[in-house]
Length: 97
View (cartoon, helix red, strand yellow):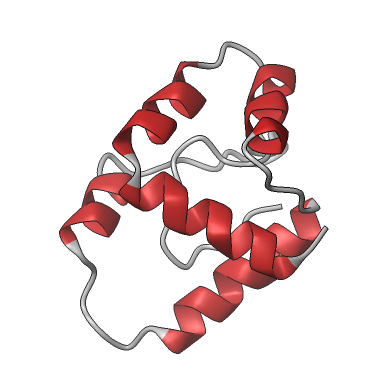
């Protein structure tokens, strides 16, 4: 498990439309975890959060078209209702646990 794995997953989900579609089509958290593991990524929620923090801190440039597409539509985090992990739609720079 590693932060590097979480970053690699983020890069792939942002750039690989087929992988993103496969991941988003999963009907359960367990199925999403299986897709992530089968693709060779292995990271904890804490490592995901650290990776997203590092990505947001290191990027002072504008978002790419792929990154804008990944975050379009927004997200809602309701009090008392934690988000699914890993998140279905990557939020650029938003640490999620």
